[in-house]
Length: 627
Image (tube, rainbow, N blue to C red; front, side, top):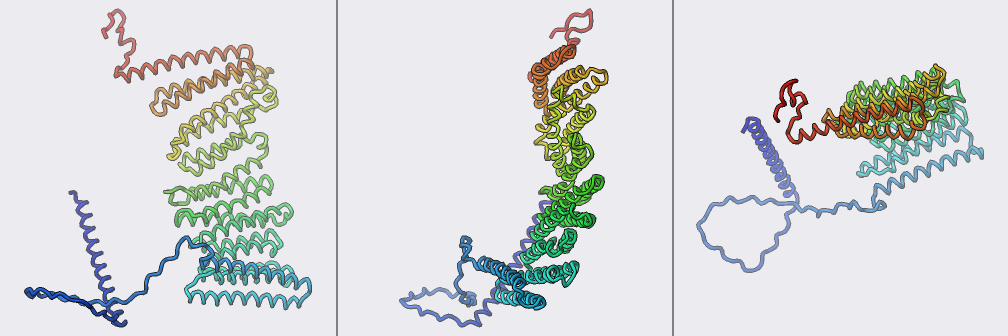
């Protein structure tokens, strides 16, 4: 037995001895406690034993140690645990929570109706209305604290106190709204400050009671109150963002659901505020600054969440929800400003992704979340660049190529996912251009340089995608499908580039039709050359040899089909004959190469190494060597 095994056995023996000593001490303590309880409680009466008793057989006296009798107290019979299948209306906590929430909602509606009726009927003076509303709200909050203390002494944790406190705080919000926008006693900034004080008091109550539900109610109330109280999209957005940033430490530590509600509420308020961007140009700067601060705060919170532990729902939602208002406000700006803001969003997202150390054992939720905003920013950027609407495929494929290459360098699947989204969008926008390349009239109306650039970018994207897939470990299962897709799209891009080049050359010499036909003939020949290259590589390499051969034969079949179904009718003159001759020669070469490969494979299977002809016949003038 090796030394490590002996050390392990000794360590386990030591732990076992320590555990035994601990169990002995616990047992002695329990015995002493039972003796003390037995001395305090009266001993149960002994029942007399009736009936004949057999006389014991005399035997040699043997000293036996008498055991000390242990008086065990009579414990109450164990109660049956509540069944998990008890109906919801038979559960005390559920009934209390439902009734408390219903009561809070009804009370709040009653307060609003009374306030509206008092204003319509001119009941009391405004000062008396505000005083009565404040007194009622404060009384509800005080009653909630008293009820909470009673529940804690009774060992209950119902939701009645939370519902009462939430109703009281809602009444205080209504009071603040009344003195700010109804009676105009205070200015809007002062009213927002008073609402912030009420919100801070509610959050402090939630922290004291350890009630996440109470904190969520405060967050939702802030979001609902922002626009009626501020009467300004910029001020409402600023108020909500300040409260959201202030609440971040609370849900970073213990309340993840509060984080989700917090950032979703703030993001919704900011998106609503940006919808008024065009009607209030004087607030453009304020909205831009607020959205920038919210995006930085969301990314910062998500980074802190990822550094502390694995990415949680609140961190993921913060990274996504904080970026959407930034994109919305960038869309509303002019072209130059929008491009700058969108590029900044891309840089911030990539910086957070690269520079944040985190645990990626079970996936990278933080990385996927931080890539959402850069991906959407690139899509928005394509729509804002001058002239990008005419040829969006070129811009999208260029951006997708950059993302795919970065994913290969970093070996990062989230970046590859962002590149896949951009690639899919770019390839969809490439389809109309590919279809138009088969029509003489459509190509006559197209400027050939953008079409040439788009085709070359498609080919470059295909090579980048193949390289990146080979470097990503988790994408090896999809490597075959990626190889087929990349090769086909790359060859389509090369055909598009060859047609555009032919059209450009034809225009320069005054014969555009000849240029169109030559471009398609060259495209077909390029397809056959690619099939030959794939076949040679597939036969020489054991890895993916079957896929390479199948892909080469399939590509050769597609090239021949194009030759007979399209080129035979669309092409004319020397280019049609040249296409058939070159493709036929390449097919013969493919057949000869494939036959030799099969011969080598058969010889290898039989264990015979095929010799070249010089080894069979020897030098000139000598007799052949016997086999």
